[in-house]
Length: 370
Image (cartoon, rainbow, N blue to C red):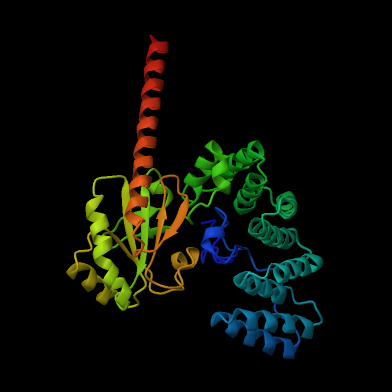
């Protein structure tokens, strides 16, 4: 999944820079984890500092981890590429674009292999792209596009690089070039790639790539259905983050149930994502409370989807239109049903237009063959 979410996430959604707000997030970023370049520090003091910083990162103390990896690099004489790489990750998590750029540039100055150079250029490009989108600055996005091209010179068939360059071109409104990149992505990526279908849509409508697209994901619901957000294209999606231990969530439950029932049979999908750690308790609660719509358990705020949507407090709901464009709404908002009605009406109208167009195309094709 190539989503920009909490600054770094590429599935983890790991290794993607983004803004700290889902509302400002770009459409997509690479999901696959870049190979970590270089080795760890050689100096004994640096090794100790590196291990301490690694522990801080595991505990999600990102600022202290960033300082620790920087210190380890300095203790190692400024030659620890892996320290710089880990520092980039920590900087990405806290949204420190300047620090992330510095670390990516430090890596680039030291690595020698084509693969490592491509990785460093890619990380530099991700930083520039996130920063440019955040600041709405085309010049910075252009620097990202340059970095991605440098990476592609070294690894021309890397799907993440191709996709990211397509994103940069789309944000620069170079739609024909962006379309070409997404077409190229479809040739080098696996059809099982979670964003394959999204890239197909970007080929048809490259302007969507710069829209406030909801993060894509793949999950298997409680009743065994496997889905991605892209598989729900054409339907309005309401995502509800909640937990059984959350009092306000339990109070909001009747409203969610009412929405699921009221719009049953219409182009709306309701998906509840539980942050419960206790699977048995979650299943029991779902069954006893008649939660018959789609259910999925992620287990906590550090779950990949929660991080993608920057769900840091619950209850939190997100509405997504039929094109996959994201809006966030709280369950308690009196306008949510009105918002859903408008989005569903739009989805129905779009589906009717598509059916009419396909019917006319079929009639024309039939006439041509006679």
